[in-house]
Each structure stands twice: as structure tokens, then as C-alpha cells.
View (cartoon, rainbow, N blue to C red):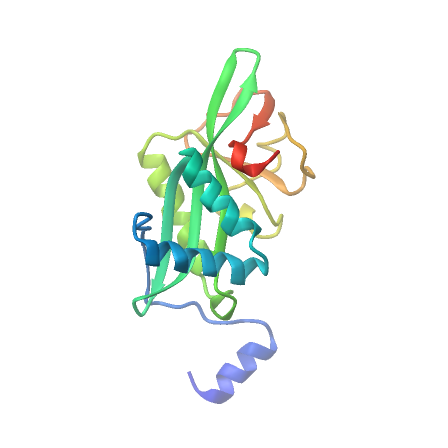
Length: 188
């Protein structure tokens, strides 16, 4: 891309996605990699809360899936899915919570978050998970199939427009009504 084209794209808010990003399992046992994941979450959110959440979920044993995105052998993004439950009249129904997802600020809006989400959803589907719940931007997560309508029968402390669900198995949430229960690390 020429400098002039790049400037024009930046002015209109369009940035070309990276083509050479790889998504892989996080090596959570590697102290150096854990420190990098922590720093990415702190930089992306501008505070330590999400990084602390990750550590709490790890300590609790609630992590289902943790992935990192690499660009030129450097970790630039991270996503975590943890076990949560929907307490129904028939008993607890398992679901996965997507939180947090972070990309270094200088690499945002380049498709890295989307790659992390898609790969995570694919892996969860392969593992037999039925549904994923996210609290996020109503303008972003629906492109991956998340819907506030699918979460409509679920009781949560969050604004309904930002509280969304995705079925990984068609009909997984049919007839599911109840209160969501996140891992204790969320502090809800």
C-alpha cells in the first residue's frame, strides 16, 4: 500500500486487516507468556481489572479455552472463554462466557479480534459446547452470530442490548430460561 493510500484509508477510518496473523493455544504454564497476556489486557482496557479476572479464572479452574494471536512471532491479542451456568428450574445448564478479549491498541481494527473469536467459537463447537454468552458492543458481536434476542430469556445484571448469546448447536438455548451464573472470579 502506498503512503498516500494508507493516509486516505486512515482518514476514513478504514484499516486493512493483517494477513499474517496466527491464532494458537496460550501456553498458560509459561510465566513469560502469561506476563505478555497480562500486559496486552492492561494495555487494551487501560486498567488491570481484566488481567486480574484472567488470573482469578485460572486460579478457580474455570478456563475453558485461552488463545493468543501472533503477528510476526509477537503476541498481540488474547481471548479467554470460561465456564458459566444458567440456573434453570430443571437445574444448571452449562454455557461458555467470552471474556475478556483484548488486542494491543496499535493493532486494533485489523481483524485480530475477529480471528480470535472465530477460532475460539470453532474450538468450543468441536468440544461440544452448546452456547456462548458475551457482554459486549452491540455493533460488534452480532457479526459473529451473537444476539440479544437469544439471551432474552436469561436473567442478568447487564443492559439487554449488550448482553448477547450465540448457539453453537442449533436450538441449544430453546426453552432455556433462568439466571446466569458466572465463575466467582467475575465478582457478580
